[in-house]
Length: 64
Image (cartoon, rainbow, N blue to C red; front, side, top):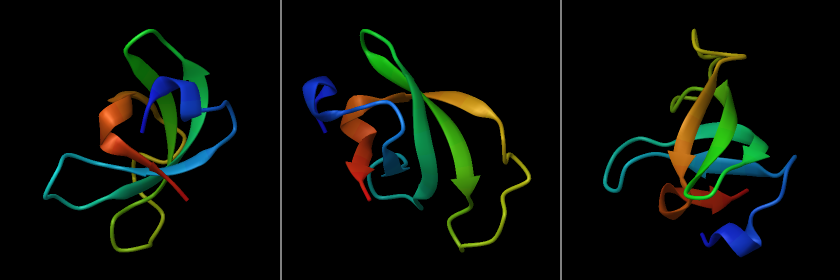
């Protein structure tokens, strides 16, 4: 995904290429990475990291 395509509040799946994906919600747009709130773990259950914000490169995100 490109930064221009990303919007605050957008639900995205993210993760490293060829690894499991997480579901999250974009809360802030930074120059090279977005701040994302983790919503679900890769297997669909609530993540122990729920409500935690992490920085994710735009290239690792896909719109949901």
